[in-house]
Image 1 (spheres, rainbow, N blue to C red):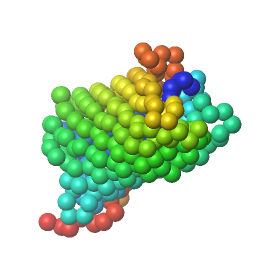
Image 2 (image 1 turned 60 degrees about the horizontal axis):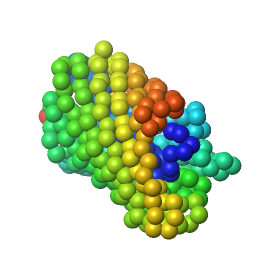
Image 3 (image 1 turned 90 degrees about the vertical axis):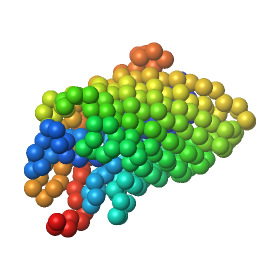
Image 4 (image 1 turned 120 degrees about the vertical axis):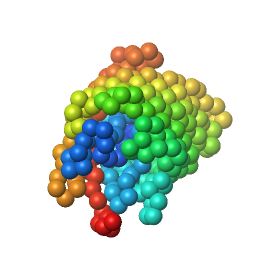
Length: 287
């Protein structure tokens, strides 16, 4: 993320990072029930699979860009709604540092509360679609480049398609709107943005995947009272992820990616680290 990129893009990127982590459900086409594979756990592109009944996931991610000096750590916890796994609730917490604000240091960012509905398919289907709606709470300090400065809404439309048994694709289209965003000087204006994403996941092994993600962000930043300016960012993010399965149902998924700026973000590069813990929180009733 380049230092010249406005704060509005940063908020969209953090939001996507917070909500991009999804569930690590068994892949029926490539793994036995006793050794579940990695079905999602993507990095920057959201996958359309809700949490299984009785399973919770804890997702950690850390992104560091070298040129801009920006970094962000996010934690997301995802829960299925009791009685109906089509509904999923989650929350996202963030800590970040804005390189464009020298001397500001690190601090907490905005908090997101997320709801997602499994409209089409599930983790065992060839095609899945699960729209998400999130509410953004202005807990970050906009004067230090760590928040939007106002309440906001974010939506994403993730679509997942199994192309062949060992190749899966994911597609995203989303938007963010903050009606009373604020800049570092205290000026306010309505701010909007949108994001597009696409990824291919190669299932080399049920517990080892190779990934290639492409993400595009366009957003407005407040520059004066009732005035905003647009900026764009485009990244490729090649990466890998692998899994450790335990007899008690716990699955640990580490991952690493290398985001590379292209087009409007040319010259920027960084590192993305991922760590997920997924486990049952209740015993399933015997059939």
